[in-house]
Length: 247
Image (cartoon, rainbow, N blue to C red):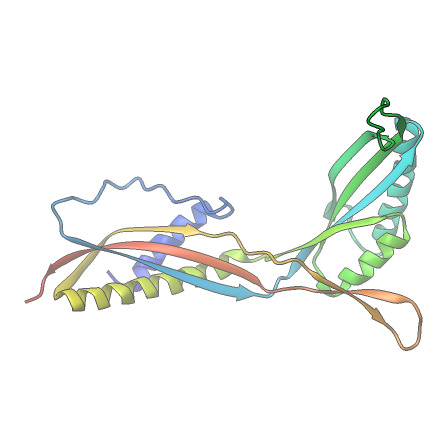
């Protein structure tokens, strides 16, 4: 069986498991006949790609004597934040609530006394999808100036992860095939057809963004610079070949 045919088989399996958090692919094919002599090999591939999209997690936290006060103040600040991001060109459909909570806060308890209620804290975390990575720093600065008082993180992604995953898969198949050829030669046997092929697609390995505060020569104000890391996509394959005695 040609390598291209093997890749086609595995590509189909990978498309069914994309985003499945590295779960093994279940095969509906019958098990390999135990009477057939086989050679099982594994291969791995890894591809790095520059991210082309990101998500900024912005948090608005407020405090109040009551849950209602904390919540109302939070809502006001969140409206200012949304207005600022919208004015900067971020569409509403690119923003969504990631987490919202209101909870009581207590003073540091004295082991000998009952805990005293200090007030309430409201937290609203907004996830902002950004497709222009050069604007990440600018949008973070606008958000912090407009009501956000915490940045929980910046997450990067690949909008065309399938193409990157396919390249990793091709590498894995090629390495598995070469391993099979080496083993067959060393064992004095001849490779037959591929009886079984399976793959495990790994999700991209995400690295935290690096943030710098860059000082301009013309201004004392600092601007945030976000440096995205390459995303790594891995794939592993297992091939089972039939083997025959060398003639």
